[in-house]
Image 1 (cartoon, rainbow, N blue to C red):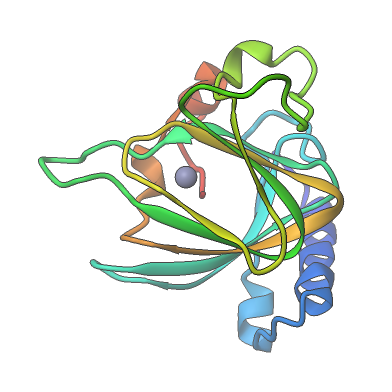
Image 2 (tube, rainbow, N blue to C red):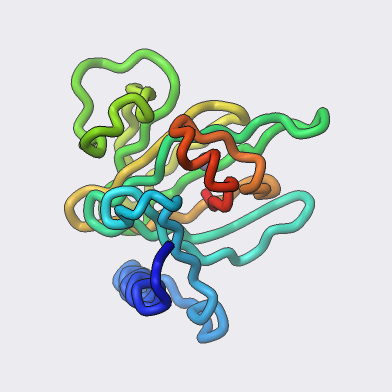
Length: 182
Ligand code: ZN
């Protein structure tokens, strides 16, 4: 668990990245920036900061902030009660994002799999996103992503977000009650 002080620190860092990306948010949004550390206790390696703009029955929009080399762990969005899982589009706004999805890769990946967690990062098909570039992940497709050395800001557009149903490859995250966000 993050301390309140850490939570504030990472939320403040996220606000600075949004500012660098030229993305304006209100003070109210700033006050509810979320910090996800996936209960792993290594937020600078595996973690994510985000602000949700809207999440209705039909659509969701948020900004995701990744510090340099910070990584969102591998997961998928399954079908729930006969309803298709979440479809998400990631659009890079600042920095560089290494995105990995299920499928054949072309060779060694450029991202750095967090040490000791190799079994939980299985996707090898690499998509590199620079500002202005985007990629759509279809429902129930495994994916993970990592920022490059400058960090990254990513806009996410998706169908309804129901984080509690996301399935993580790392069983420790699943066991942590799926209080996760992206
Ligand atoms: Zn996702």
